[in-house]
Image 1 (cartoon, rainbow, N blue to C red):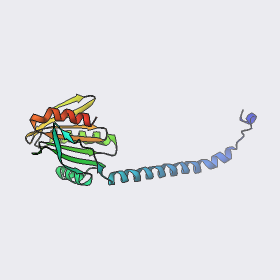
Image 2: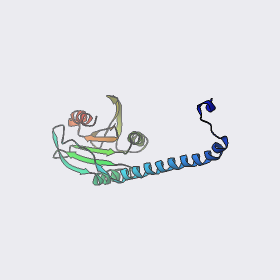
Image 3: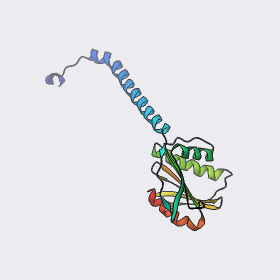
Length: 183
């Protein structure tokens, strides 16, 4: 049938060229992996500001750390380095009644892993936090805790991990507004 179409080929040529084609394929895959890794490294070496709401539960944003200074704060609190490309820490109210921590990862699955690691670390270690519940809010799992005199909530929003620490009287409203700000 190939002969009828004029598409004759020589088996000897194919037998000799397949190793070269295979080697070229491996080369292309290696180059693509190297480029992907270089782009990934560039994304994690540059820490951009994460978004913060201007107000929570009627309290204005008082202090904020954005980008690298926020990453320093997050790393210091957890005594470890994170592969983050966005970070923000905001305090709300005159007495800092609310603190919002936002960490952004280069890839969504990394944010999910951070949430799992946080849950496991809190459950298995001596921490100042007592887990209260894991609840579903619009398809997202929200972890609720108490500790250090405040209510705490942490959840994932795409590539972002959000931790909200809030005094009890402002907890429900601040939590609902954080969920709306970080869909």
